[in-house]
Image 1: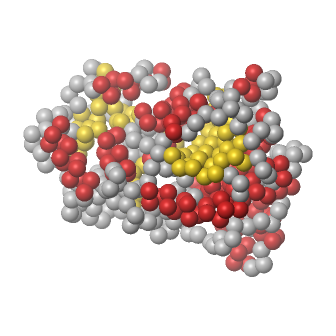
Image 2: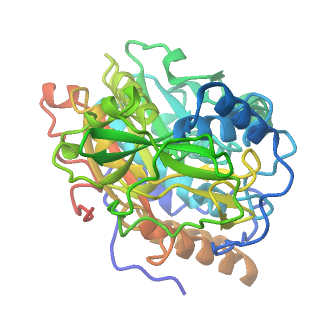
Image 3: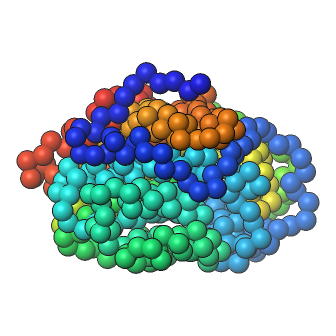
Length: 459
């Protein structure tokens, strides 16, 4: 039996009573999390289409950056991992599984947090919901179900905005959300980028970015006597490459996951002989980087900084707003967290580019620094602490009571346990809360944002 020691705190606004309602996601079945393990099979057979593009690029202009590698591997218009219709990306049959796919309770508690922020701010103006990287649409579907059931939110939802560049993923999302859109009075709009979403006055913005930042391109830079040089990618068998190898003294972050470095890989890491324009600028991205010693290697994402700024601008608009960023990472930079997944297993980062998911840990401190002048940030705290303090024990108990079969009861408890597992997703995933600074101008204490004020996880 699943047991918890803490309670949720919602006050007398009707949100606490909703947690006890026996509402279930229709057709929800138990799902299996396949534990990640290292995969050492042969990944380096026939050249993939992305590899051919990489080789052509190297021949034309020299070694490529890790940022370019990730952009090609994940987002190439025809050959990228997320762009191919034949790829099964999510779920037990795909390459990874996400919290919303495990249990409806994740999306429900995210929805309650956002509604709580709206009610604390005004609770009368219309609101809209934005999701960055919506996956199959499962999280948004769960959020919409909660909004439909809460009396305070009925009739207030103006629009849904999904930032998704893949036509394949858009089709999945449209199918998942079709019923909800037909039953509601709101409009669903898709955007290729966050910059396409207009700033609206007198509309409260709710935004969620779940496992979005981990897939954004990063550059890898290394501190040398010359400054910040860039770690690049080159063919391992090309003797014409005159670049030096990365320093063996690079400081490896102990929290970075183990990596496979196959001798059979046709790609290798090389260090630029001098600082590049990108490495120089990224070395200045945070004051935290200024005093790092020679030999330190870090992953820095310009794309993440830009997206964080975009979030800050939307939340800081006249209508106000709130956001949740959920991802794996910490309040610090990482040196070697880049990894690839295929069929729930970690594979070599250069394994079949375009056929595997490529991901990296998120530097939450960099996100906060990027929007510090626009919004008030809170956390990050662990997913375990966030969900537990938001009332997952109350919600799980209500769903168990309403279930007629032992199998269903066990599925509910297993789902909750997986989400808050201290040896898995519960601690690996972090949650960052974002609210508008305008709340302070209106006399509200933005320092009191539940559940982030109760506990601050160590970085």
